[in-house]
Amino acid sequence: MHLLSNFAFMQMPAGDGMPEHGQSLAFLVTLVIFALVMGLVLKRKITERFAILWMGIAFALMLASSLGYKYLFKIAHFFGIPYAPSALFLIAIFGLTLLVIQLFTWVSKLNERSRVLAQQLAILRDELDREIAKGRSEHSSEVARPGDRPGNDEPPVKTLAN
Image (cartoon, rainbow, N blue to C red):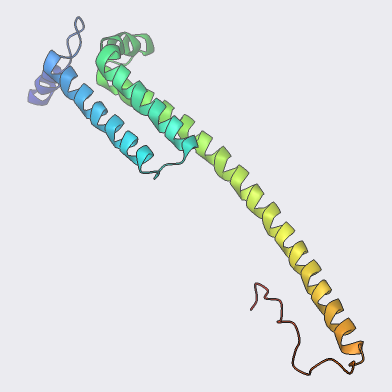
């Protein structure tokens, strides 16, 4: 029975929501996350595509922590969740699922581009090898002219294998 009374103590009030100091702490934490994302963007540790995504996530967290926390209880009541902060986990899981789907589509697109580029590189390498072989066969079939010095050949073409 003692555990149940502690659980009831942890319940948030249904009226005003989070106490002001808790809301300030949540806002400060998300402000730190926002500043961290900004620092990574400025240092170019995050590409532009992800910078926009993470800036949006950081801004949404700031907005939710400052304005939206009082609506969390209404969302929890709408979905029938008895403990309102649990609704926050539901929203976070939904958001993270959308993020994972976005990242998987991006990785799939990059995987396809890498495959196409590898195929194009193999074709170009094959064409280069054929041109080099054709040049060597033409070069060896030429007859030395009186003005040519031996050993004055062009330097060999470097390939990726060398």
